Image (cartoon, rainbow, N blue to C red):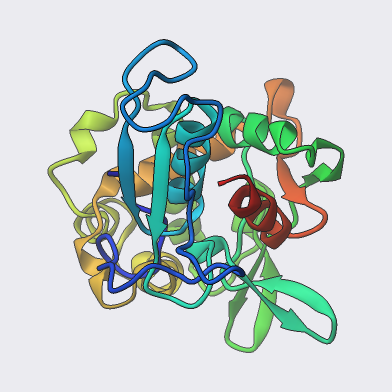
Length: 257
């Protein structure tokens, strides 16, 4: 089974299948490109009947891959919408993501999937523009110079944060971070005040009540990906956005399964 992307901690509990437009379950009602139950898939292997818990991007993508290869996939989602954290809601005729989302240049698999779904022309790679809201002011927060200008921290605290961030960017082995939480690592290296001002609000916003249990590996991954998105020669970071919103990607993906 494949867990879908959902908010909160852990995989969602499937209560009932999401009704489709025809009154069926959200998922594939019959094998595609196959020969029926007990037959063989497009690659000659046995057909499988797979239940996928969670209708997020991961769950829908897994169902798409399975049905494309002739298997029967059925997606179970307890919410009344698909997409998990990448889902959208309507705002004055437009679609707004429930959580912030973008693609890094290293996210090659989801990028290939978007092209496969026929939405590649709507995927735009834009220069990053990041702001940090603190004390009723939005501070630019995308470059090392922005960090040096970030006055909510003292000057030497900014230097300390910058040096440890650089060390994370240069670290290739993530395993050293698996046995420590982000909270403990960041407080010890960057200082309690830097953790309180910068990192704790970000972790709380992403993980809620579980913010202090998150592995440092997660922070390392985010910092490491940022470097990859800047390319060679210190270029500005570029991030990918589907111009029709991630909701359009989810809609097309759901139609395919």
